[in-house]
Length: 173
Image (cartoon, rainbow, N blue to C red):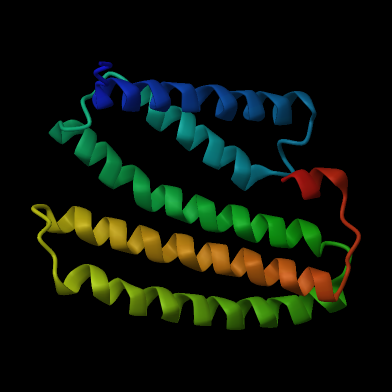
């Protein structure tokens, strides 16, 4: 019988998360395109810094909890910034379509946030969570991730309606 120590596995994955994030940052820097993808670079720096900074901490410790609570809102802002940066890069050469895309993205974002907020009600109605702050943090995070996913889906549908040629770098981003 194999006994798995989940804290060790979790620690391993947090450390392994540093490698691709740091490699991508170095690749952007060496390719001379770091300035073009500033928000993505900031997101990668935060991911590397958080995972290295908390690598020696137990996920059950108070110091990890404070680091987590401080980093998550910044992470959310950077995630939203990455989505907006993708939007900006896709429509950089198409001002007319960009205006229509902004309107559809704004409408999609309102719908996505309304749906996210409506789904948050289920989190708070029958909560047995011992840490209400963590419950709130996870509910907000889920709402934001759902809104971003729906926004990206909407952007993909919009691009399928108005095929806009995009560079290989933007497509891979």
